[in-house]
Image 1 (cartoon, rainbow, N blue to C red):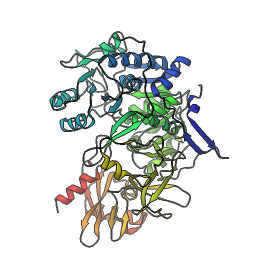
Image 2 (image 1 turned 45 degrees about the vertical axis):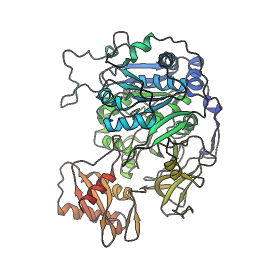
Image 3 (image 1 turned 90 degrees about the vertical axis):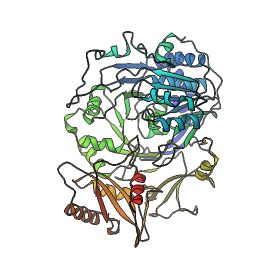
Image 4 (image 1 turned 180 degrees about the vertical axis):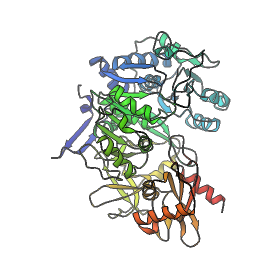
Length: 587
């Protein structure tokens, strides 16, 4: 390891070896593809960059030299299709290894990568292609996203080029009731053959009107000369995963990649000689949080499992098989681990655990500590930011707290009038944005009104609410829209949900407000029951009493609704807005 991260950061520590100050310097010509990937490839070519596998048994180990070679070939192919500096390119590649070739190549070309989920339907895709002015789309064969694209292409005048990537197995092979893969006679055998007899990018995917990525990249030259780019240029754009309305287009420059050094180095605590596993699909921002920028800046190896159906046992078994040392996944997945026999798996290689994406319930924190000996270090950020609040390395997490502001940013909890909240008072999490700090978004693309609504008076307004205790720990309350105003109280759903989830009868829970003539809004809990429990008046009374005894009595749910499943976004976040809207419609 050559500590190339120290070229871009300045940091100091206190007597407890805790990070005290942290700043990022982004050179005017910084380009992640050249200055990180290629630098490591040229100076430490055999260092592992990624271990990749899928449920079908295919496995590949890529060094940084491999990543340079394949990204250069990809860049030459894309340049030949007229893709260059400033062009918007949508990338829908699930967890295929080709995503890393494409991402690095687009950075080298100065094009703007626009990742998206494979779950999009016609309305979703048309909105994104036109809203972002997408010039080219690079999409997987798996699922129906290529057909969805064909269905809307005529209505998307900026779309010039469609490129298809054979996703091989990708975890979509049918399963029997015991989760064993069931191969039809015409399927390829299990193993590396899924990529074709020659290995990487060897299996073509012919489709009318589409260019075959694997074939054309293999044919492309691996000699690629550096293009002129600037770190201030747009580099990456995500569609925010809102719970209502059309998603906003979040635009980032190259400093976003460097800001993720605090993510990988001081939160994930990656080991340059270990292997880090963040469970995330490449269509979402969490993938570059945990499978790309910060980890490679730390010269560390990432692990990628190209699966479709989540089975807790499969994930847990990978830890011992591949010697995974650091893990990050959302609380929902830790909860699924709780439902499996965690003690039956070899987790001895694992030395560090983190979580983000939604607030961490204390019961999960305690369970993981009891069964693995590991503390879960929670972190918070958004599509618009990298990590902003967290329990960093060498800190002492408080179960249920999101941690403290990271030293890269100035973060306050503010009232609606812009004044700072007192200790214990709920307000909006706001981040100082003047001058513009590395990692914060440039803007909501082509939407000055929404940008101005979020970034004004020197602060970026996150839309998330929290309160701060006397020791500086932040405690999440909820999205602005999720906070329930009842009888003069501001009630956050997360605290009530956490209490209810500690009851054996509750598998999942969403807390919302229901219009109430007397209180303004009444607290409602929508509950998915654990196996063996039945929703009835007796259980409702028991759950209400449970909440009254665990937290302030005025917070208890006056209404409890039992359902088979909660409405969620495509990346697994509970859509409380759907529940609220349904209740309003039934009024």
